[in-house]
Image (cartoon, rainbow, N blue to C red; front, top):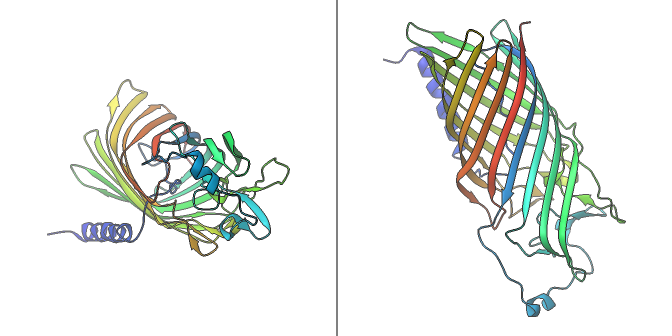
Length: 351
């Protein structure tokens, strides 16, 4: 017979599973996921995150005959015009511009984050995340007719959106194990740089996908769970994100994330604790919407295998994780996910 605690926990998991099975598919950007220390404690830290993309599901060769049919439009379509301002497209396909997709194309998204995590009376957890983004897109051949160009690089950097989050810490102890259940809620605030322009003579805006900020609110209910027994443990959780319309009338598709990680702690010395981990991470998102039109080259789902390590020396923790996609199903001929890397260092303290 299930206890009241167990019934509430199972009901919460069912609710998140239901959200995740609705129409949602993977996207380029993931929801905010909190870094979990080996124990509940406050910390400040700096993190570096890298996300890479390369390769396509298919390639299209362009012959001279087919090139002659492609003519630059006298007026840009609505999809590449925001108000009276032209926009440099991150994914030009289908928008009167054309990219000859090749093996050399790639995208990289690098982030430096300052994080503050504050645990109050071991019952409440408050987190703030401030990112700075370095986003780069490279095309070997970019057909902006009648002036096609090669080796085209789009590079944008700036402050991303501030994230604030709060969780309730629910501890359940028994003689054999410890359970920690953490329902919570996060909000992305429209504080980042979302209207960065290129340095060309027209001062075109970069498109919203590669802007550091979104100039939109995002609301993220989430649930995290940890089970711990005799130096073994499991971390699992999920979140769902709703976004409002942001800069350039662009709205990021609603998304769902989930993860499950097994870890084992090794007490190396009295002051050194080592905790390798392995698991799976899944993210899924709907198509983005730009000026009431679904963007066909956005959305899909992807599953990553994850390998990581936490090293704790007294009050300092170094965290590293590497993710590699093992399954992905993206809408259209999008560039595919490659590897991801996260490295962080935190300093723990008590309030």
